[in-house]
Length: 131
View (cartoon, rainbow, N blue to C red):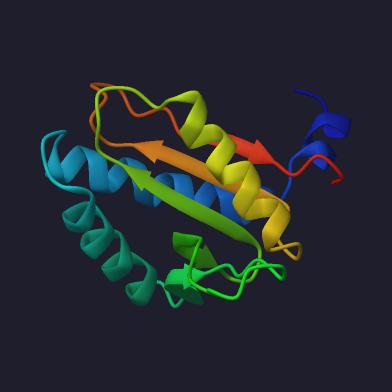
């Protein structure tokens, strides 16, 4: 990776820290907990490191009266969205859901989907198309 590639990464420092927390959660809790358990521990790490976040953040759609149709697990530092999964496979629908979250919450450019059920953690970065 050269210096120019580093400039292309959205929120590199925050992404690196968040990814480190995700690996810590996965390494310490293993792969057979529930999403909520992973989220609880992850939230503890955010608090310990004084990172601003909102948990279970509603992302309203302007055209729909019900403002709680989209709820993301974490909105971190007004910069990225994080969606936790604990299932055998992340599906195309999960990816499309994150894209919808990013489009509906237009101030966010980056989303990360993380599936803790995998033997090896592989966070999936999703970038809003107009970024």
